[in-house]
Length: 295
Image 1 (cartoon, rainbow, N blue to C red):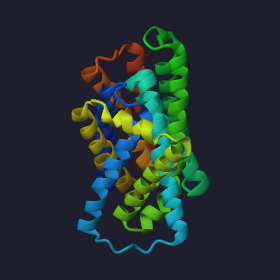
Image 2 (image 1 turned 90 degrees about the vertical axis):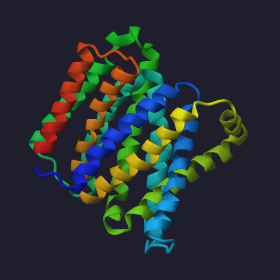
Image 3 (image 1 turned 180 degrees about the horizontal axis):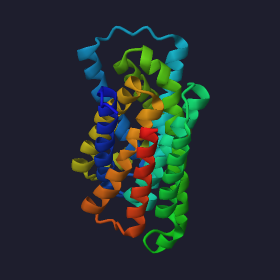
């Protein structure tokens, strides 16, 4: 398959996201997942605004009210909800297991793309799904309970699966808008939807003071800031660019390479174990990605 800009952006976003996840993991319990996601999204929005002004100017693009509403909702589901649940899974079961569970994103995107975008699913892609699922089962099997508490592992898997489904819903519902409307405006509106949704949630739950106090304590900003920069700005811009330029199914498959990077980097940078079971999980999920890519 010839590699064009869409394929390049999808692959590059995977590498950037993997590095961001490792940095978020190193932050540990310094910030809860909600606060960590809030900072990431606010930093991303602050970076997108000057980028938008420099490249597009501030003249509002020709979005209809329906398109604005869909894009904001996409940001709420795919950024506010999905990323918070993803970071929660990360804190419960570690980077390598979370990376493998994240392999569900591609099957979810492909299935939703078939249902709502008219994209096709071939027989070999079903075989790819089977490989991906097998890899997830190998890494999350309860034999590993000595490393991660079984209750934490179960909750982590639920949060991870939920995060991938919400992320898939968010990107599929905005795919058509990405293809027909200015890219940076769409990116900015999604981030705005994510940040606004989190602020509304904080207001309804009366959490502003609690969140403020958590940000006032000493924090490892040398890790949090670059993680937010990579995760909410560089990786997201490339991620959405990939979905804009190629089919959602193909982009989601290429994004799966992030999971192999996460497991490898978790071993190299975090000291997480990478025994035969995880190696087999990586090989199976990678094989599933290759099968779906070549199908």
